[in-house]
Structures are given as structure tokens and as C-alpha cells.
View 1: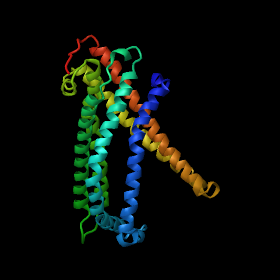
View 2 (view 1 turned 90 degrees about the vertical axis):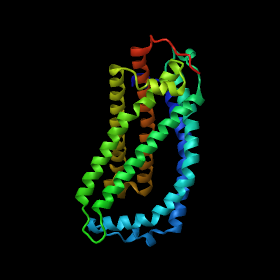
View 3 (view 1 turned 45 degrees about the horizontal axis):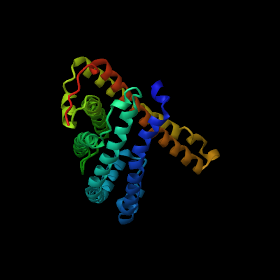
View 4 (view 1 turned 180 degrees about the horizontal axis):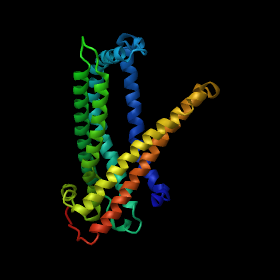
Length: 293
């Protein structure tokens, strides 16, 4: 962590390529949200009449409101997801290649810049994320459908229990499954492998090396959760002083908390990659390169 903190250019590259994709993508999403709200105003969906004093009634009202917006969101997702995924694969492939080429100054001259192969690995990572997200969404839909039924009293306690269980379960599953896609780029560049060879080799690294990778992935996942909680605390802390600060100051503080979360998250992504590189040196630096295309 200390070494990465002393490499502002490396952090800037990681932040740069992520924001190069993220800012235009969020702007497009923001415009689409406004179009959907114009087509289905909150009053029509019933969002303005939610009973905030009765959570049992409010839960049913929110589900009913979501049913109005779901077809519109699905229509936008159909045309927006493919170009967004393609843009992310291209930008992340170039950005991640630049970071990994510069993450070890001593070995930088010997690490080849291979953005096309990196894009293949990033596409595989994105596919795993899509499958995991779909499984989580389907599980949550099942939990909602079985605990909030028309004509019956909503089981909010049961729904909350399932929501917490599924959220933590899929979070842990992602940490346990995604590490091969994080170490594969390092294997590809430092052992001169093809993208598919590196991905296959990432599953055959031995118990000791694999254990370290899983450990780092789990710890960084917990760090992400901690950053999220910290950002929420930072944005909520000034609320008792809202009368003195004013609405604009509260808005600026919330924006600053969000920016802090993203920048800190990008920093820890570089920390994770640096840790993976150091463990690669420990366990595999003496292996001969494969010289695959």
C-alpha cells in the first residue's frame, strides 16, 4: 500500500481509464433516467404517494411502482448494454495493460504492451460479472416474489433476511471466483502466454499461491465494503447541521464522498495488482516463459 501510494502516476492511469469510460456512461444513464421519468412520471407510478409511516404498505407500493418502470429499463438495457460492454473492454484493456507494464519499474522494459490480448481477458471478466449479477438479480426476484404476494401481508423480515444472505453470499462467491481473471493478465504478460493459456494456467497455480490470491481478493472485497460504508458516513455526517450548512453545501459534501469512494477504490485496485505481482515473483518468477502467441 505504501509503495502504490508513492506512485501517483500509476494511480492516475487507473483512475483515468476507469473515469474515461465511467463518466460518459453515467451521463448516458442519467439522460435515459430523465426520459423514463418523463414517460412515466413519479405520480403515475405512485412514488409520490408512498406511505412512509407504514413499511408493510410501502413495500407493496414500491413493488407496484417498479412494475411501471421495469419495461422501460429493460428496453434501454437492451440497446445500451452491448456498446457499453464493448467500450469498457477496449478502454479497460488499454488501461490495465498500461498499469501492469508500469507496476514494477525494474521489469517494465521486459513486459510487453499487449492491449488486444488484455481485452480478451477483460471480456471474460465482464462475462463472469454479468453471469454473477444475473444470478443475484434472479435470486432477489425470487425472494421478493415469495415474500411479497398480492392479497397477503408482506413478509418484510423474511425478505430482509434473504436479501442480506443473498447479498453476502454472492459477494463472497464473486471474491472466490474472480481472482483467476485478476492474476491471468499478470501470467500473460510476465510468462508471455496467450490470453486463453494464461486463464487456464491461473487455475493451476498450486495451493500455496492460490491461497494467497484468494486471501487478497477477499480482503480487497472487504475493503470495498468498508469504503462504501465510509463514504455513506461522510455524506450523512453533516445532516444534523443542514440548517447551518444549506442544501448546496450538503450536495457538495455528497459529491466529494462519492469521488473519494471511487478514487480510493481505484487505488486499492492497484494495490491488489501490486500484491499479485509480488506473489508471482515469490512463487513463479523462476518459471520459463511459454512463448505462446
